[in-house]
Image (cartoon, rainbow, N blue to C red):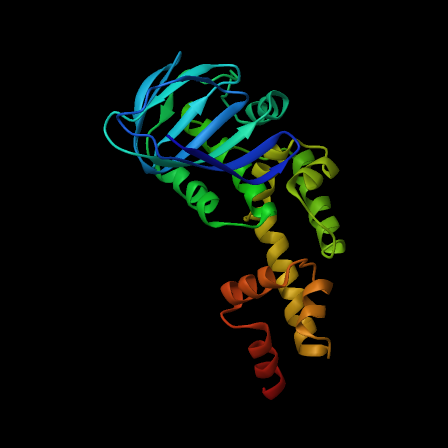
Length: 271
């Protein structure tokens, strides 16, 4: 049996791993222990998960739930291998997420898994395809919050407190003034005096998009202006607009504007 765990991103209190297992029916089942609170989106394969909260067959689309300190077993009685995108939270970080979700009264999971659910699909898909650490941070917290909302049956409804609205408005202004600086979710939340998930949830409700997408749109808008009005190279434009990686800038520009930076500049010049 082989288990390969690749860390995709990490920050204060959270980590994201791509976990691939090649175990099969012939391999013995060993008891393991969750070192942190864990939500693992199954991407491929199946396995049996047994924990004090219950046992279940995990198939693609399901989410394995693990409590910190909990012992568990994973077996592959029906086939070989699986792949999961696994998000881990230290206790303090997890408790702050739970506190921000309406209706969530316990920091521990009472069930072993969530079945495939449409509201969790965008997060699982994003974790499987994104490589940008800032995007993965936002996806990790969003995934955790969405899973808790699914468990409690509480969606993001109700009136937004005026204090939170003021904090988000101030955060938007700070973002606009610091687009060339790194803007991880944890920093934006701390500046707004909120926990990361509460900030993410409130920002999305107030602004209508996530912080990462808002920052990305603002940076691309700045880059487009610079490409039209300056003689700076594409690499220089990318750095001035806040992109530390040229390949990320090219991929984001093409995805959002439908063309490359160089082609965009040429079109603007000839217009």
